[in-house]
Length: 235
Ligand code: ATP
Image (cartoon, rainbow, N blue to C red; front, side, top):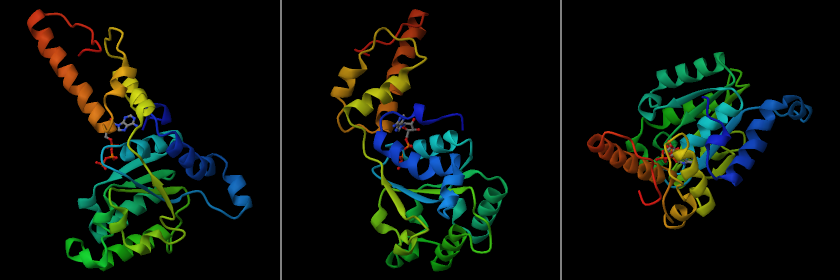
């Protein structure tokens, strides 16, 4: 991906944590090797929907010039496909493998009816452990809205032992997300600070929806007037 942390608004705490736990080990592996630690491993992101878990995982790959593979859980829910996904990631390391809604795979035993079953979870864990293979340079990121549904075996040390909460954006974060969403658009002095103030509770995805709707209305206006007018705070 060409996106980096500069394309992610807010999330300073999350960026700092990912920087320390993922980016530095990739950029200065010798420091980590000195302590017998390898780059890579698993990170679990959790938090409400639309707050940028996928977005920051992409940007993480962009930061370390790694490939980014967004694994669709429908495809990931097959033993053969899981093996292929990990094999291809190993052959093109550095690589960030992103599993959205990972709880769909790792549902608790009591929810097992909804999943491919226990053997699929075990296979995923053994791929994550790198049993019989070299997982050097493979970073597995999982996202979930409901970490409590995740099988405890996922959270053992060496697996998803690092769990990062991705919170909804605060006012400063919303302002920065709005600035990002509006860059390169024709603007007439849009006061993103005041919009951030009145959008408490909006996720990043909600803000994107807000900007998209606004642009659609500007477009339909432009169709009648024949010329594009810049976006204002009132829009
Ligand atoms: P879900 O749990 O529903 O999968 P998510 O947490 O993975 O949601 P994303 O898909 O990353 O959410 O976010 C949706 C969209 O909102 C992104 O594609 C991006 O355009 C925008 N967005 C969300 N958060 C941010 C942010 N912090 N900075 C910039 N854009 C953001």
